[in-house]
Image (tube, chains in turn cyan, yellow):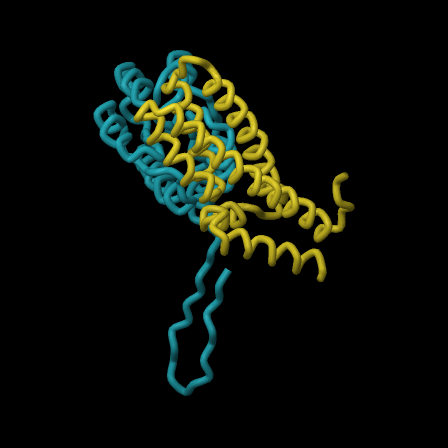
Length: 159
Length: 144
């Protein structure tokens, strides 16, 4: 956390206080409206899954994780709904882009889908499948935060 | 030298020698009182998974006919998890490894596997020392 330095002076100075509580804006926004964003993580690599889940919990997200695209599609087939999906590209059984295409084909057009991959060529595959955005791995906490803020404001507007 | 100073020196050395990059600092920043063992959990999982993957790669490359797609898939996993924990040297070796997979070069893959093994175990050893020193700093006895 950083704090501004107060300069002794006869002139009035603007005091800026910088808060590095990454959680605060998302937490307050979701708390005021009563619902945390619901996220689905689709990732086969355990280390990546652990890190992404931790980041999402840190940002006050209700998050669950599955290990491949088929498990993600099955959740949607069961009628589960999410505000945002983070999907890796290359996974066993069903890839991320394939899962995204199936999810969109089911009519799940409102859910924000984020394609995630260390492979920069993955962007085209995800966007053609119907993802909203692509982010390269490793994902930064600030990137997640800004995405979740968009999701929350959209939720709040739709009531 | 106190355990805290040894820990700081070790981590600084790991950055200076190219074993780690700033992604590891991102992990450290994610640790907080609500998740006091986060870095330890991630590092332990990485070491466990990395060892398993290297074992699988050795088996695949020992076969008379190599399935380069499967080899590439495992290397992709190790590259991904290396990037996520900031294991720079291991990640870069995996990038080279994938090129040999694309070329379907068994010799290239075998040589690079050996480099991956050396880099991984060097990192793993330092991670283990790091975790031991963290335990001491936090007032726990070292694991035997």
